[in-house]
Image 1 (cartoon, rainbow, N blue to C red):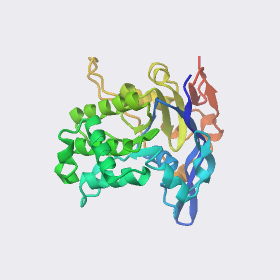
Image 2 (cartoon, rainbow, N blue to C red):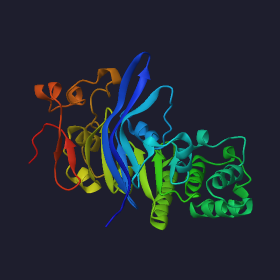
Image 3 (spheres, rainbow, N blue to C red):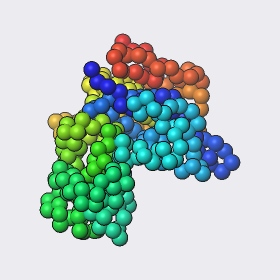
Image 4 (cartoon, rainbow, N blue to C red):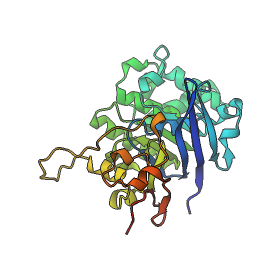
Length: 324
């Protein structure tokens, strides 16, 4: 039976915009089991990255706060930890791969200096031991000539190599949970395939849990065990990858799947699009936040709170539509 590594309960994140407090993420609950991959999907502005940075406690303290909820790492609530305590968790038990590896790596230091420093901060080992471990990690993620790369700078490497270095850094401290925020967005398809393959190998070899943030449903189908669909800061559907792709229920999930280009289709019509845009934080109403873009909308959707429907197993959907 799988063990739960991370459990998020009723998470709410507020932002201070001017003199107003706006809720960016509301009532988010999910869990990630050891050795499994949970993908969070949705358009830009849906709250995916806010959820991830909340777990890492990296939200700007001046303009944001976790207003409600728990983030439990093997039963320990990260929300209640002090800054000193959470620093021992970051990079050690939970590591994060950011969307742009060029901005995540310091351009004036060599790859080796950055990797060794991070490794020694989280592990009580000598510089020689840290160097050996970092070289080993570069080999694991498929970096050629790892000893040579340790002496090179980020600008001397391709986007795909920098992304793999970020994965190696994340794993050098034996992290239990790897958060990957759009790890393949800026990469061409060949390098993207290589990076995803390395993540699969890492998951298998180290039994690492992965939280994958993406808007690419093709990547989700290839990588995920479970899928959480977010819209306007809320969960609209959650289930296994089979639930979401074979039995999508929420109109937003259906729209995302219909937007994927298909090579086996003879249909010459334009690619399906979801009309409209994600509403601003100030535009959230009491009803369904997808109501102004939904082709199945009713008056009740706009005025009443929307409850989750349990569709069996892990599969839940936040919608008023009747389910067979």
